[in-house]
Image (cartoon, rainbow, N blue to C red; front, side):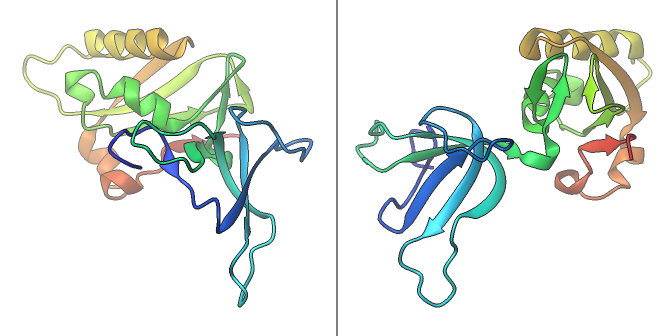
Length: 182
């Protein structure tokens, strides 16, 4: 991204960039969300022809405020990590934005508990560091209220000791989705 932070600038002269409906495989218009599909126009050795990225994105062909005129790609998340919650498609990155607004959870260590293909309620497991003045019930309520406000889905929060979640890997490698449907 450039300094405007309004999408990643693509190289329109090197790639044919398409957004495709994941179900119908039809090419979608600019602004519509779908799977990013790339065709390399200049790579002769190992050409990528309609390479299915598995990334959910949308395109913005309008010139950027920085002055560049190339297509901009806005990344939403990996196709396999999208969650169907109360009729909405959500990604862990959206959930992180809400959880991290609460000071005690600003570290962003959390997991989504996926208990069904389509879930009526978002269930979160959030890492926390207890203190003598900790108010676990209040913290759960504040995290739930923030995610409900931001994402418009009912949320249930379970607090887990921070060190328990960090044993699963470094913070950027902790599995964001625990899939109980498998």
